[in-house]
Image (cartoon, helix red, strand yellow):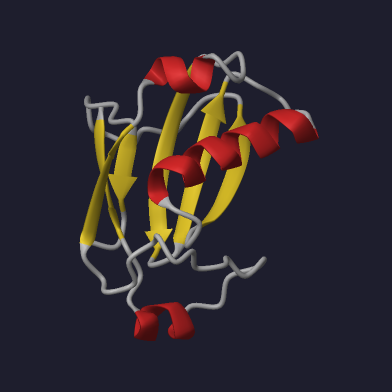
Length: 119
């Protein structure tokens, strides 16, 4: 699966309050361009047992990872997911990992593993 995230520009980064504040890595571009990376379901499944997942970009520097079929994750599982996402997207993103019984896919028949809510 190829994912496209919008890399935060310096002005977007300053305008969006994010807690905790992500640290921009020297290797993470901050010019607002699209960044593509490959992430496979097996990458996540190797870290944590799950029924389904979705990654959403909800802000210029925020990615939300929804893990379906789990009531909770251990702190080690959460840290491993965050590390894996940042290894692909860069350190410039705050990564919020959430567990849900079932992902709300909305009315669409498509169940895309990534959805960019800011483009």
